[in-house]
Image (cartoon, rainbow, N blue to C red; front, top):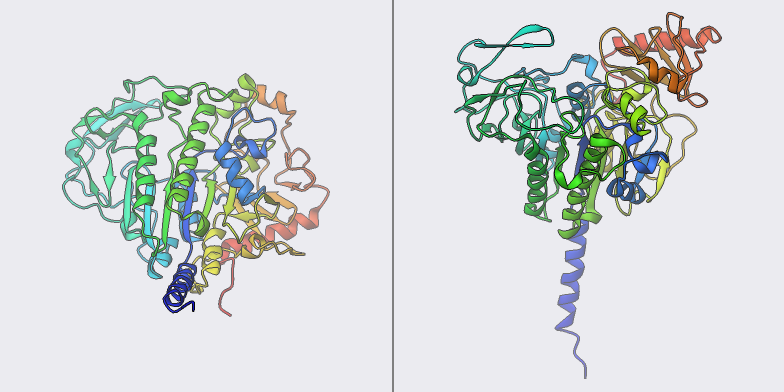
Length: 508
């Protein structure tokens, strides 16, 4: 007679373990590239000269958005918007400078706060660029000539290095931080949690960095550095730290990793093993290395058996830097894709960015959405997927796009409107297919004549601009004079949004 008694409890145990594993909330990994253009991904630019196999695979396993936007055309504001679900312009337009104060108010609620409060282990690794409350011994004591003027800056003896630095990631909902802050801003040193790991004793000589650069210029700001600081070690070190952190996680506790890369932002410094891996010069090779970083993180998730229960989001803080213009001429690679404008611009190329969202078993692989979304939507979407109710004042501009991720079709756009802005002087508003810009240009600098000839760009003469983005994503045909009622409608909507405290009503 066969006895099943010894097997039955084991069967129940296995079922219980399976149910327990299913009840663990999904891990979340956001990989935030820096200055990567819409056209840099091979999977969405058939003419790309840069191989991006890991990002292509991520897109094949998830959903790729073709009309996704950062809040701003520059670094700090977009990062604030992503983490708070609030348009940056509700707070400020500019980046945080060297040793600048926090972009945040202490009352701000971040995505990391919300996840931390429901039991997530949270980490930020990489570029912070959102400020700390540094403690200074005295005013800047050093000066240097840069950009045609004499600039004061803090030296090693002007800053308190042996005390915790307040106002940083640990006070914004993160349990752990590791990074260099911002690769081209001082201090040139590693920070772990709220401490500088080694006190800088030297000054970065911005006219003689000590290393060759692959493309463009170093763009370093003067300031303190540790002895033998090597910028070529920054991206590999961050990659190693992120992979190690993933391997340290316990499968029984969900985690949130915000991996903010310094690449492919200038200085353009791909490591030797990536030289020549693209057909787009040093920048292209740096994008290849950035893609490799993504691959290493995804491999770590697979090795830990966490891939199926991890949401992975990849995007970039804004469009590509001005080096993209000569790159297009010299290599035939258009980092902005077929879009007009670059970093800083309210033109589409300044803020339409790569955006991939993967969640195995929930999001159908290989899908592509043309829904207009913003990075501020990440906050409300993740909260919805985790069944977290948000306070009406939290993430005030964040729309829940989980229905799109679940494959549901909608007859109307999810977002009532999307505001495009970098600096105070120029604004854009997108509603459905229509985009209005409140100036005769969407650019904050002149497009070079050689590039205008390549793209057949002409200058516009009207006080504002109107485009149909469905039929004219290159922004070549200004319809301002032809649709005055649409211009009036969008002007009013822009005014309403700017005067309101939120775009989304969660009071009901």
